[in-house]
Image 1 (cartoon, rainbow, N blue to C red):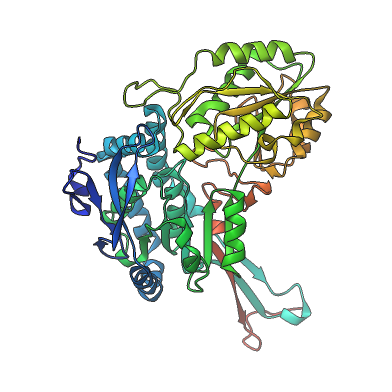
Image 2: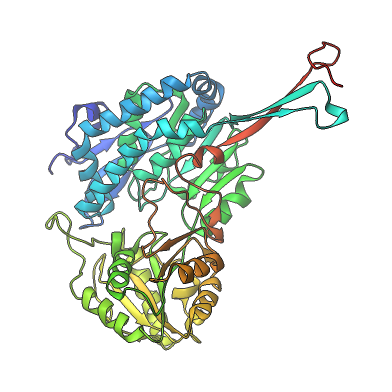
Length: 506
C-alpha cells in the first residue's frame, strides 16, 4: 500500500507490519510504546485496513495515570505560560511542515472530502496560533475588604487554577480539530491531559500528539489513551482525574456523568438544529446555506441542519429551490474526486442507522422528496416532508441523527416555528433566515439553543465565537477564551492585614 505518512517526524512512532500495514505506537506520558495488541483502523471509503494502532493494557493505563498524576501535572503547572505559548507556536510550525500528512490521514481515516480535510487541518493550526489571544482570558479578580465590617483591613485575590489532570474524549467527526480544541486549553491553563480519541479514526489525534511532544511540552504531562470506549469506565471514575471534557452523544455524556461521580464536566453533546425560514427571507441565500448545513461532512456534525421550518407563504418556492440544488449533490470517493462535497459515512453501522430512521419516518407518514439511495457507507442526501402535527412521533425528530437526513415542515408563522424547534430535547444551535433584523432578533431571543446564526448555517469554526448547548445538548461553552474557563477552577486567597496600619479608615 502507499505510504500513509511521509514527514520524517513520524518515522519513530510506527513500523510496517508483515502485511505492509503500518502499526502505530501510542504515547504513554513520556515515551512511545506498543500496546498488548492492535486495533485495525479501516477506511470508511472502502473498508480496507489502512493502519493498526496499539491497544493499551490495563497495566499500561495505570502506569500512564500514575505518571501523569505524580509527575506530569506538576511539570505542566511549573512550565511558564510564555514557554507554553512558544510550544504551541512551534507545534503550529511543525503541523505546517506535515500539512499533507494530516490532510491525507483525515481523508483515509475519516472519509473526509479533501476540502473538509484541508479546512480541518488549517483550523487546527490557526487554533494553535490563537493561544496568544486565549491566554489573555485567564484573568482573576481583586476584591477589597472594606465593604463589610467583618473584612475590614483585608483583601482577596481570586485566581484561576488548573484542575490537575483532565480527561479529554474526542469524537470521530472532527478527529483532529476537536482533539486539539480540548488539549490546547487544557495545557495552556496548566493542566495535564489524557486524550482519548475516537476508536474509528484515531490517526490524526496520534499525529497531533507527536507534534506536541516535539514542540517541547513537558513529556509526562500528556498521553494518548488508545483503547475502545467500552473499556473507559475505570478511567472515567478514577479520582485522579478531576475534570472531563467530552464531545459526543447525549447518551454517552449521561453515562460519563453517572460513572465519573463528583468532577467538573464540560460536555458538548447531540443536536437537532432547526433552520427557520420566514416569509421575507432571501430564498436563494436560505436554500444555499441550508444545503451546506445538511450535507457538510455528510451530515455527521452535531451542528448539522436537521429541521427546516418554513412559513407557508414561501414554503413551496423554498422546497423547489432546495430540491433543485440537491440534484447536484451526491457522495463520492474522496480519493477519486478531489472536488467531492460529500464522502462516505464513518462506517456501515452509521449507514444502517440512517436507513432505519428513514424507514421509520416513511411508516409514520413522512413524504420522501428525494427517496433513499445508498451504496455501502455512501448515503445520498435525504429530504422528508413531514406534517407539523406528526413530526414529534418520528425517531428522526427524537434522536440525534448523524447523517444527511433532514425534515421539512410547513408552519403558519414564526411562533409556530419556534414552538416546534423548542419542543426538541436538544438545544445546540439554530438558523434564522429573514431580511428583517427585528423579526430575526425576536426569533433568536425565543429559541432555546446555545447559538443562533442569522442568515447563516450553524458552524462552530475555530471557536472564535463560543458555542455549546442547552437542555440535552450539553454543559458549558467551548471556544477561544471560553474553554480555559471550563478547564480551570477558582481559588480565593485572603490576606489579613489587621493591625499593620495598611488602611487608615475614617
